Image 1 (cartoon, rainbow, N blue to C red):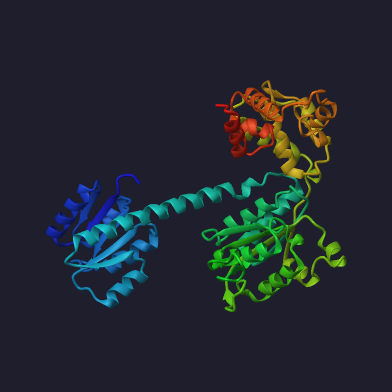
Image 2 (cartoon, rainbow, N blue to C red; image 1 turned 45 degrees about the vertical axis):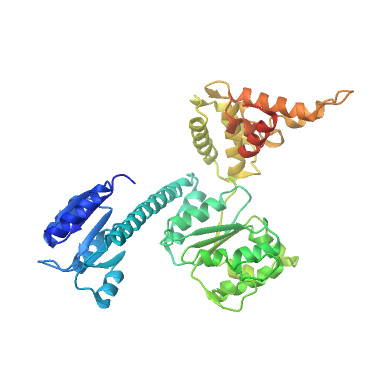
Length: 455
């Protein structure tokens, strides 16, 4: 935090002077007010990290100032001070949003400790507000790019759903169409945005772990349950839970999810207490669940319960000129990220891109653009830069097919070091880009650099 700014609202000049001395010794900037009128003037013209507010003032009460302050500013922390301490005043001050309530005469060490914790709270509140603002910008409605009529209708539906009280939403569409992005947009543009967005992929965990992650567990529920743990549904109370690939959820968990959706209560694994939460459940799948129902792999009653507000995301090949808009967006994005100087995409490259059927949809297009920008040599992207389909691994298939193992074999350790150095050479020592060339995470790439002593 920068230099903390504290407003002291107190009608006794000696107390104001004493507090000013103590706080200024600790690097704080102090503003004083001896009555309510001066306090309101100071609050209107400045932003404070902390307000020390006396209960009894010549022209008003501290509670009245607190009441008016919280109508316009919910971040600034207020500590009430009074020589007329009683439980009733304390309870009322806390209800109105005061951080703490202290009585005169002060125990200075205790006061300074409380002020320190209060300033930490102010900093945390502002960081949370900035994070929320960032997330709301990152997941604004404008993050879904598209002018095709189908997409315009989708925007309208998403906006209506986000502002509604709908508690169960079902996203369908092929892999890579942006279901995760739409789920986040719905959350961060709703009144649930201040509360958590929790997501889980139903194919990523075993049935036991998935149940524990969703519903939580009690201590001793299974061998490794050494402590009680809240599940995602409990942690997301007031917010949103996103169940990705819900069509692959194990049958036993389908029954438990159905009960939760119908009654909005659940039990932790190994628990007996009914826990009630208020969450919006957004589920998504790229599977045909009607077929899964017919095959006995998915419960029909659960499908009905999930399918309250269905939203179908169209495949990229059905979005017409949106493909070119997305190419421009991704090329500009990765040009900035990789500090390239690409200024144009050739018309022939657009034609090649639009003629492709994009089975991986927007995700595949993004990856293709990233690869093209990363490996480009000039300022213009040409058709040869856009490697599509089975060739999207930069010719790996042909390369491996033509690779001949030397008669005496090859040292795999030496070969790995050679590939690491070549990747760094190709990307001008950019480790993130080099890792992508070798389909490694940055951490895995760095581990291999250390193993081979490459600095």
